[in-house]
Image (cartoon, rainbow over the protein chains, first blue to last red):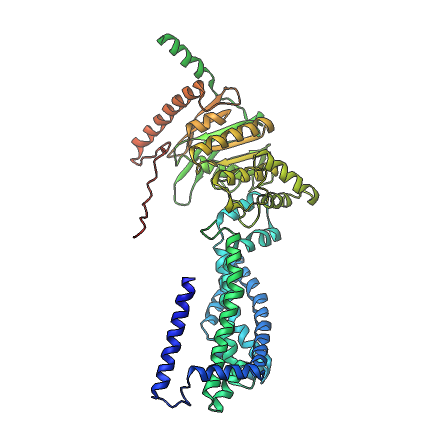
Length: 253
Length: 299
């Protein structure tokens, strides 16, 4: 309860500060609107369905790209950690590409796919698949050697070993990697959507800029923060905490 | 009075005799085994050991005497650099379904329940699905864990985890059970309980067990044979048969007489090791009180 009160207090202070600066009139109210104006803009956009539609399109894209990233990234991470060829030859490539910010793929994606959903999906997948692969590899390498030894003495081999021992043992780490991958994907998506007519949240921001509608820009930003935090907190946090509790990784018993 | 005591001392030590087991009668046969680790440490030198079917052999020695290396060679987790290890006259190449190694930690799969851990191991051994659950529950009862079938490992105490691990090992029914100081991390009281439990199970099943320990009392409490090993280089110095009836009581006078005797032998072995290298190797870590820093809550 106390924690929540502290969080609310900081939030209230920030909004208060914003209100104060806006009222001082240093900048024109067109450039720095008051919090209430932004809130009104947010409510208006929710009411006329623009925001909901855009958020739906963005999340739909994100979901498709993210599913692709997971189905590619987790097996890739497993291969890198288990097969020497992948560790020696593929891992450096993955690490190298990881150094490339995902938005740098956009020009190439536009040339390859044109102004389509495909281009954005490509950018999002490139932005998250490598992070997921690296996190998976990391957590598989970090599996307690005791468990692999006990599996070998119990005669657990092959597929049963990989899917019955290695993957579950690495799962808490993999979920952390998936969470990270999700936030990479979210960033890549919005960066991609900003740059052309996409119908998503990113475009709503661009439209706001073109119309000089600062309240709209800020309102969309607030919406992006809310959606991002909600998925992170509600979905991943819950899965992570449950998993860690079941695996006995939390201090409390 | 003194004569009587002396007589009794003699009589109890008469139950401790050198073992002579020929390779032809052995289930497990270790011949001229050498092992040198990559860092040039000679873990084992010219070790011969023959274990008959149904024996409970304790490998006893100070740390660094190669007892664990020998056990891991039997399990097939270590490939020795020289000599041969065979079971039922077949040379050992890697881990096999006839042997099962138990570690100092319970090493349960943390995401599976007690029953799940056992049925998973049974599945790996090719036991039909229909039998697994029943067999798991039988062994859970046998180690007195009834009522904890659906409990996750992290919810169990150290002793209970070890019992679950023992149930898993017994359920897959290996011909040879290899145990690497399995009770080393337990507190003294739990340890005695586990020893009594293991003994009663051994009496019932008559499994061949090779048990590594550095605790003299534990070795004599459990073993039908105690193999005394010495460090640098790791080798067998004594091979004794323990003719004490089972089940044994931890407070038994004859047992404790033997413990003192073997303890002396062990100190001799160590004394010689000390003159060779100045590295002290304590035989039995005395139970020291662990002092934890007290966290004093602020006002």
